[in-house]
Image 1 (tube, one colour):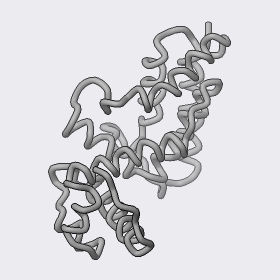
Image 2 (cartoon, one colour; image 1 turned 180 degrees about the vertical axis):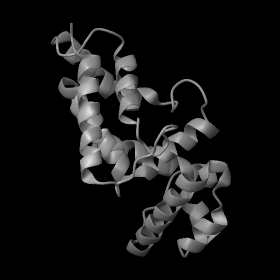
Image 3 (cartoon, one colour; image 1 turned 90 degrees about the vertical axis):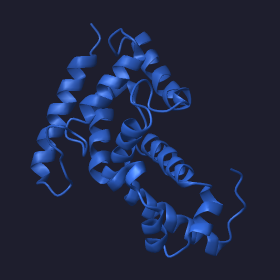
Image 4 (cartoon, helix red, strand yellow; image 1 turned 120 degrees about the vertical axis):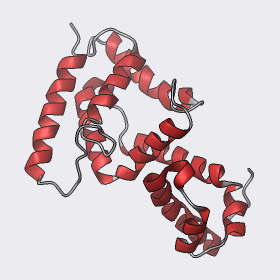
Length: 195
C-alpha cells in the first residue's frame, strides 16, 4: 500500500502504533492481537491505523519485516567468526525478546514449513554468500551454506524466549549469561570448523 508522507505529528502517531503493535503481536500472535487494544494504547483510532497499514495483516507485516531488518542490522553476520555471530544473536534475543517472538508467531500462524518468508533470498543471500566465501577461504566446514546458517541460528536460540527447554531473560546474573556465551561460542566453533 502506498503511504503518504508523514507529518511530524503523523510520524509520532505512526511510531506509537508500531511500538504498541509490536508488543501486542509479540504477546498474542497474529490471531490473538486486537486492533482495539492497539489503537487504545497508541492513543489513535482505527481509521488512522488502517490509513497507515491497510489491515491488521499489513500492520503485522510492517512490524515483522522491520524486525527482520533490525536484527540483521543489529547483528550482521561475520562468516569468518560464526561463533561470535551466534553469541551476538543470543545477546540480541536478551535485549529484544519481542523480535524472536514475532518470528515464532509468523512460523506458527503463517508458514509452518519451508522458509519463514517468501522473499527469503533478500534476507538470506548476503549471509549465504558470506558463509560460502568463508568456506572457500577454508575458514568454515564444507556443506550447504543455508544448513550451516540454520544450525548456527538454532544454536543461538537455545535459551531464547521461544526455547522449549529454558527461556533466558536479561535479568539473570551476568555470570550465567557469560557461561552460556562461552558454551555457545565453543560449540559453534567446533560445529563449523573446517576440516
